[in-house]
Length: 235
Length: 307
Image (cartoon, rainbow over all chains, first blue to last red; front, side, top):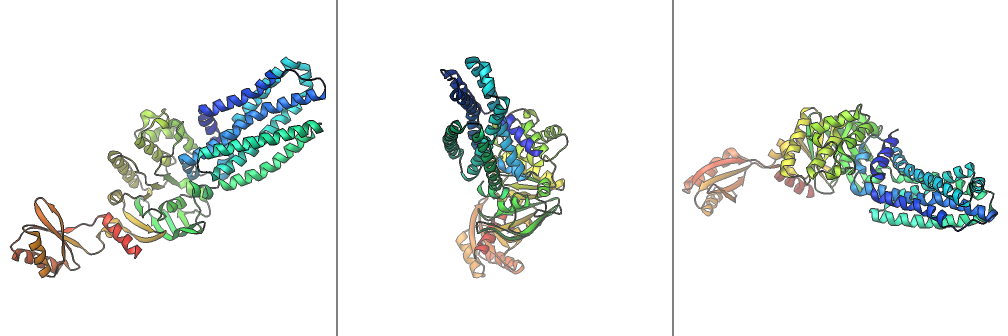
């Protein structure tokens, strides 16, 4: 369980004490809530239901974006400050280091996603009627949306880790993270459009399956590029 | 305790370490010397299990780094030139974190013990980001000692420390030798190496070009002597030249002129030198053997390696 030691250290001493990351996460939490508040009305019928699902997706998607920047920052900061060397010198498996750092970033962001989703759900119920919101956003769908955001976070996190292993500065990593965020926003917007056209929830399932497959590949690459020998060659 | 056996390491085809072999025994400090890019850091990282050797093997406390790198890491304490600390963490939490990573029982107690040992017990709850350079290096040493390892790998531990702090650090390293630790000290500071190292390993372009006891390495080569006298230095040189001794002028000492010469046969040359100087009417005050510094010996070894 050494990965948990690393994860908890990240959460306790890096995420919670990093004002910039807290502010960034707070902004990404507020944006979807603002969308719920600023939406003038939800049309009756299927199109309105899709809009509600869209709001729910935004509630988890936006906080997830902050996680990408967080992961980029933490890995390159370790490289820049040389703090990775003592960690690599300890009797820990390479995978535990990668897993620990990833979990340390993913957990707080998932908590932010859950909070935003709950807040968005409550606000949407207040504005558009609890009965309607409960009918569209079923517990199963909310659960699926959270799982989707988790998979998205692991996917983009793995990609960011791979990039962070290659770049030299946290500035460069942040720029790459920005690119990942922009690209994924575009992809999700496209997928959202497809989901609204096809309906029945199948696109969401397909997206989930796609993300799981991508995660497996990306995590394996991330594990390889963060192996001791590889990392030390670049520190 | 540390047994490096024919280790080679290549990075993208570039040889950083080539067939290196040496040992470090318990209760011994071995200085790993060499110019930049000689492979010192690569060697200590391979020994510490951070980097895998391309060829060869390292045994640490009898455990092969190839077979069980994690067990090797658990036996090594690693100090780098940069303290590399998590700046947001307080000292207590930082040391306890590493104690847990090394499976130390009672991590908080161990953190407090180490802080006391290194004189940091009054700043246990202060954030590491507020520490001075010397304090940070002490923390890095405490981190390396957190699991009480039998082997210590110190990579430029005194870099950027002020002389007083460097002296304290040297004293501490020597105290660890007394506690039977095997210590590999990678350094550019030859004065530091001369003071505390029992043996020296010199690397050049990844190859071990000299291994030996520090005293043996310093005394190797042609013995040199210095003669201090009152009188004209040019006349003295001429007198020595007539006796077949090639001397060079050195800085004056205590108002006396000084000439230096080397000889393979001091029993014959030194009386001849004295006689020549006295016959020339010069008042010789001292004729003494010159102790070669490790720096001189090291530079001579490198010059030889380059040839």
